[in-house]
Image (cartoon, rainbow, N blue to C red; front, side):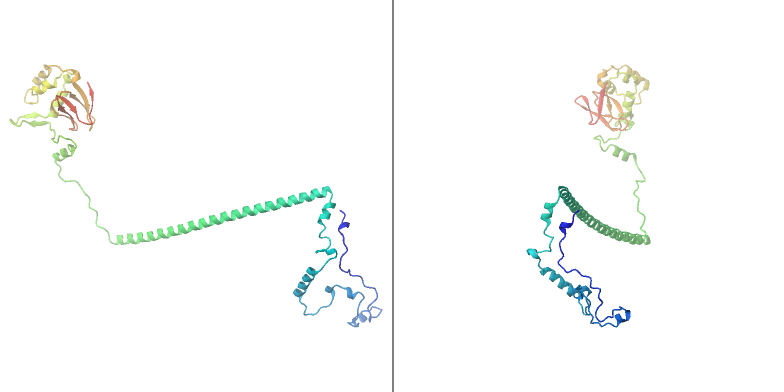
Length: 325
């Protein structure tokens, strides 16, 4: 690359090599003794043009004041042709005109690369600032959470100390043993019946054997009489008329069993449609019930009332389900 166009003569005086003549007052022989004995007032050729840095200075020299004077002198210095700066600084436009296409292209590429570098730098700085703000927010959150956990720990520690003190006091003064509630020592069957029959309308307990109120004769209770009727094979075949059985007063146990069975066999058979299987809602036991029963039918297992006579027919109690024979 040709740098001749950028060269300009320097505005300062170039140091010149002094003449080879020895200074005045020193012998021509140039011996060491003559140099030592020379007068300090001797001068050398070209001593007036030496830079100030090579000149003698006193011990009271202030370097900072001299630097300030040099700066002021440079600012107040004027250049030829009315230029505000040193020659050669205002030649950018002329230099760009003299550049070749390759140089212009390279210069444009350099500018684009610098611009891209600045953009990447700004983007990187922005990302770092965002990360810094995020880290500051996270740090603030962690600090607040740490303070909260410290308060919780202090609270739990205080509660633990209180519990320890309370347990120590209780250990020193044991409490009396707690009383245990137990049931009654004596328990009568009537109490059991009262509990069982509490949800039912009929509160009368059912017994297997009862007594006639007038004669005092022992009689089968309703449940026992019903069990005897339903256990007969004729009843399972639907050949027993419950109305006739009730009318014949078969509840007297003093009569002969064979005669009672013979009487049952000679009764008029009843239609099968007059019977239905009723499921007890309490124990789920199925009991066969005459649809025209004129008495209250009670479950033989749990004494639950299955049906009651209403208008010549047996009306099932609420909760009972039935299926016709």
